[in-house]
Image (cartoon, rainbow, N blue to C red; front, side, top):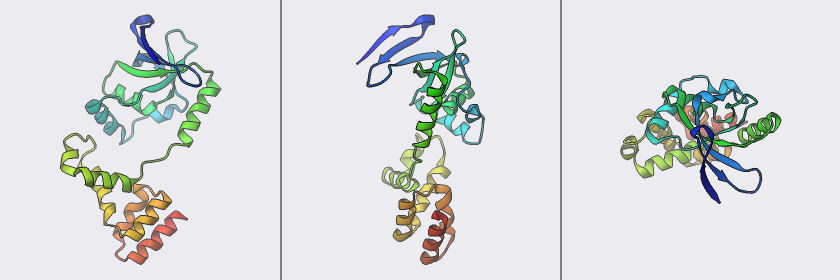
Length: 197
């Protein structure tokens, strides 16, 4: 069940009841959110601008996760440092956040469990989706540019036997892409096996 009510300081909140702790959906000022389990995650790198462009185009699709800080009116970040940094890069003054009241060790465990069990998207699955929908149609609403699409679609040029190795091994785009430069299928397969090992 979900119910909406006015929270203090003008924030809107919705309580989400499920098995386990109650999560509250809040609209917070970005200036009220500090730290994070690993603060370095919010530092700028070459992909942060792409994330910001995606948020500017599509909005923030997944709220960040916070807990109450010991400092009144402030919140400590649990998960979502890059999303928060991208929103700040865009100059956003407010952000959607899920509030989970828990002590710092529990927050760290929450972050680690989410981070350690995350699986990266399979580049071959991405490539097949791009081909199915069509690059032209995707480019109209895609913030990362044609190069990002093309890199993934090129993986479909690998022979089926090599694609099976890439898929079964869960190879990343960066691991699989160099296989395209090897002209012989047998050598591609050998190189893929070496990369896996």
